[in-house]
Length: 378
Image 1 (cartoon, rainbow, N blue to C red):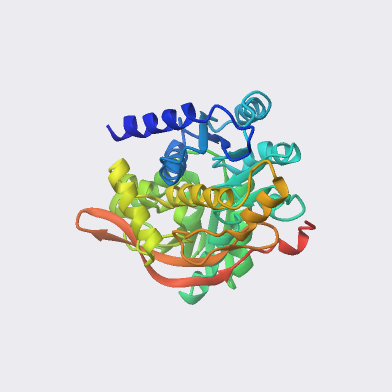
Image 2 (image 1 turned 90 degrees about the vertical axis):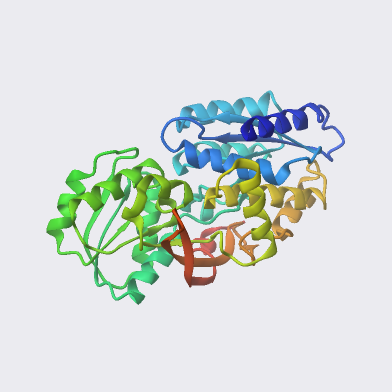
């Protein structure tokens, strides 16, 4: 019933905004992953965004499934820009899809608000005045994990991630902050399901800890197989492999794992409390960090619309830069390359009754930006 209600609201919003000539209304094209591997991430981003804009008659949303395929994402973006005449694009989860879509989008004068993917190329030399990342730069959560590993006394980490832009950024971020040695470093196949070979290498490596970035179903598969292997090494990762939607599938194998995130459901501010309550009421489940990112993206858009018309691009861009909204994360601002300055937390997987979830145990990085600001010549 909730899904039907959400869809109906979206259709009603679209039906009420057929004209955009006055510049007061904004047409949004959401391209995200809604089927196949990683669909849970896209669904959460979509649901968070739609919750944020629910009832706003000045926003129209067209949502399409990219199927996690760059060529499909490019086709959808072209149609949305050329035929549907969208003002803003958003929604992409995967960095390889973002690299395929974002440069062409912003160079055609459209705004792109990223609720997830934050590849280093778009933060540094490929930055653009019309591109805003509302989540993080890809390295960020992994940098905090490297810092936590130091504080935990780890000296010899085995690290692995998928072989695509976000995976490379992940291991770069971890190594940037981790002061110890590497027992091994592996790039796995994107979408890989069997990690027996990698786990065998970890067993033989002499590592004292494991750091991995394997989002979506990849992380579920790895954690289950790692737990069954009997290896007793401590595991550290970003929230992408230990977030709310993942924990239900991983089960007790994740208990006690430390992970890093810019968001957690127990961040104590009014905006976050309202978001968590409203999301549960609307969708009947706890939100994930992906849902929080979609929600904040919607709130950022609304805040800019309250200050400027989208057709007045310079003023609208300035309004986006101000980030004048109450973020679920609390303190939030953009650095000059339009990526967040924010706290990154260390969380621990716990049980609340019968539900696996996370609690904040410390602040990993305070008011943290990214390593690519100096490369951005915006």
